[in-house]
Length: 498
Image 1 (cartoon, rainbow, N blue to C red):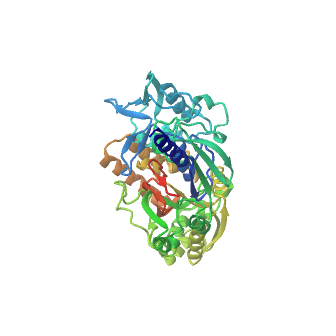
Image 2 (image 1 turned 90 degrees about the vertical axis):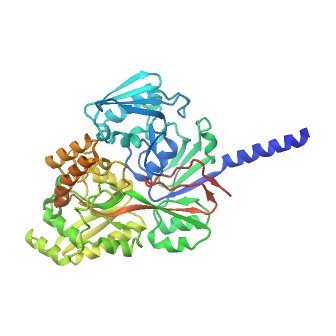
Image 3 (image 1 turned 30 degrees about the vertical axis):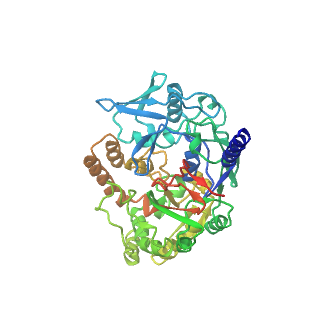
């Protein structure tokens, strides 16, 4: 009996060890930028952070806020203080404990680091107070209806304060279910299971391997060959073949964000051209683009045409702004009104199969209205840096979307917004969007966003093209995966029969 019991126990241990030793391989559309949540800006970086860095709070599949490193939270009566009770069993990957001091240090770093991209997200935070070892309070300069949403993303991700003096981006030390192991730029990011994580038993892979594969055809071929186990963002042209493939699972979900064209309207010599200077030229470009054509030809019905940054599921999507239909003749009339007949500009885009097809279609449609577009495919992170420095005329780029409407608009179009790559600046837009940030009443916020959009729809620093879906594809051997509207890959409870 003892021999049999020992054999059974040994078999169980070996099976458990084998499960933990499994690799899970995810094909990404781009290579992430910096692996520092306070300085990062790519969507695919957020996918990696989801397994690497726990946050104060998260969202569930229905976009409700749920506890993660915080167990509960409460607002003061005047909505000027947000207090979090924190977990007492969380560790960073370097073994140091997570507590209120660590939470304070992280929020202060995100607010004050010179090149932090979280500054505008936390602009309302005036000070951070350690109430006790596991209670932290954020004191605000004014009420902020957006703050919980910000803290459910990179602004709420926690790094080990002991590593702040090191180069965080090359060796991030967080507290998530997986810890950083290695990175080869443009090839792979490897995370290893963090055995001391409080929910380690619910994570069934020894390693996660994130592989950037910009060519969607190659990405799908890798999945079919068994070289990766799932991919994010299937090329819509492959949707039908995937649906008919018993070896694969197609799991699309409607997202929160958009794809659009951001135009340099105010940053140096690259903005000094008809497109950058004259809103009538931008209006003409919008009229030259058939969003429904892009949806049919490239999107295979998955690319819902967009006229605004808020998807239809959002209560802030306004019926006052229906999708503008393509009208090349009206576009030509606007160009004539602006005193130009032909407009030449360079359109940058992240170099992958889908965006190549979209931008070639935009180029062809716009040519019929008098636009001569030169296409510039660029490595995605490099394009973002060029946009940040103003070294571009227009760029086709998207945003993965946020639960709160502020996250889809404020930082892109306010004068000092950290992601305002168009350098658009209108004090009235700032006033309206700043007021919306401190207004908790949904109807009042809706009215403010509609007012701001009336100005933005006229000025067009960003031309919205379609709402971004998240078409995930997985091997049929994968079980337990749920697609969330935020497009993140959550692996709790996910298993692989290989």
